[in-house]
Length: 412
Ligand SMILES: Cc1cc2nc3c(=O)[nH]c(=O)nc-3n(C[C@H](O)[C@H](O)[C@H](O)COP(=O)(O)OP(=O)(O)OC[C@H]3O[C@@H](n4cnc5c(N)ncnc54)[C@H](O)[C@@H]3O)c2cc1C
Image (cartoon, rainbow, N blue to C red; front, top):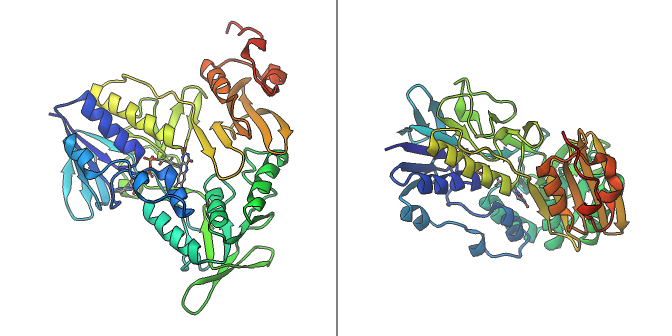
């Protein structure tokens, strides 16, 4: 009987456990997490922090789900070490757990700002349900907020401020939100959305240090220009530090994430990785990539489970990810790898409608849609087909995209 051990009960670990049980009914499966609750919907915790959604619908699995599938779930258990020769992992309680095949699905932890007082009371990072509970409570009691981190997670803090009636200042380093994926024209729509929620974007700013009162509570953020922003709530979302510290020096190949092939295999025998923590071979992009999104993590977990059970390279990971934001009156969707292009096409259609398509070697590799998401399935189809279309930008930018208007695919 094969013994599978999965570290992490996020969506990638949990989806691997479910797949392993289906693919290998007689096996032993252990899932270990340092969180105090089984899988919940990380995408929805922002709605809880906004004060909108109660806790119950956010939970995905209760402990009974694991029992029914004969999966051994260890909550509140932090993995502290891995010995690939002895094929065991060590936990903070001093236990050794042996495995035949191991999946590392430990994701990341929000990076703290390397500035004075960045751990003061009232300054929040956002990753777990516990974080969301604290953010909800803290924002509910706050009057003025500061947000740092002009990306997909930072904007959730802006939405929390907006929904909880906190007057927010969103301090951004450059001249716009998510400057790696949006031009000024697209970003301006997002800035207007923030303003309508009572959050003011502040450009060419950031945080030099935080000020605290005698009790250690945050009272202000001071930016590198010396401008001071009073706040009793702050949200920091400047990126993730991957949870790899327990790996030590075992020869596992890493490059700001664990390197895996498209079968989710690492360079070490019987050690797999899935989810946010991987830097994987993206077969559509033709290079290594990383992907911090729910759908991608779920699929990587499933693919890892299939390959672990098959003891073979049974199925490769091939996926076009998407990430949507629903905080504003208009929808927003990023798909694929919008920041990795070498060529772009973009157009504004109205005050709340904008589109950008990113190409690499003539093929679509990602994009951003604001206001009208209807072309997404067509763009994803072209990505999966790896069709060279960068020479037909006009067709791709028509308000209603009609793939029949594209020239027939060239023989490659
Ligand atoms: C606020 C927020 C909003 C988001 N919104 C969206 C969205 O709208 N759309 C979207 O697609 N994605 C969104 N994401 C990203 C998405 O949630 C992640 O990409 C996805 O959850 C990653 O899953 P994972 O299983 O790889 O990692 P995680 O969900 O991070 O799970 C890893 C688990 O491993 C545990 N762990 C780590 N180290 C150890 C250890 N040493 N021992 C034991 N356990 C350990 C962690 O505590 C954690 O429970 C959002 C994320 C956040 C935080």
